Image 1: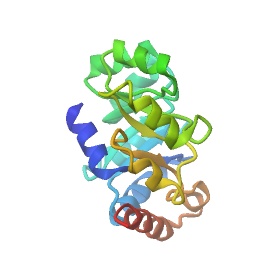
Image 2 (image 1 turned 135 degrees about the horizontal axis):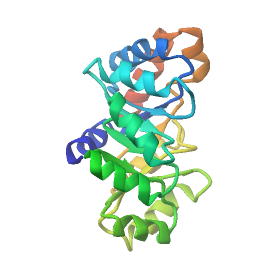
Image 3 (image 1 turned 90 degrees about the vertical axis):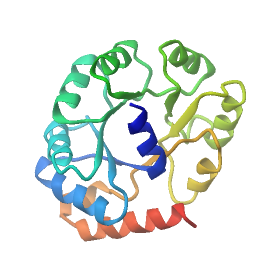
Length: 208
């Protein structure tokens, strides 16, 4: 779990992917790797999520997690498919405990002091700050990081090229999640060269 968190921190940017057809998963993973970002969070919002995670994880060159995981049964399916980490929009004890049983990193959503304390009580030190854009953004994370000195955040939701550095400038931010480099319409159209370009541009922003 520590290794997974270290890898996410090294990437600094996690593409949040929605796949409607698992047949696109391998090519999408290839596009992300070619663009310099070998990491992805595949959301459980579509029926193709499980097979997509499996196809991407089988490649061996990309760190794949499952997103929008709402219950323990989905944790089982995600881990069986090869997910190395599990992301939830909110904080669920059942999801966190099942992730611990499987030995995979849990990244639950938490945006209030109460939710962060609850995460700490479950033994977590990193949370997804979601939805970041409508929950106070970077200033809110800075404010929460003060009393919760040992907590790191992965803000997602409303993060884009225009405000990326606002979040990454905060020491308590481990990485950010975003979907602008993996637009659903480009995936559906099979424009993986375009996704590679968008990914490369996003990686360049990290070093700007």
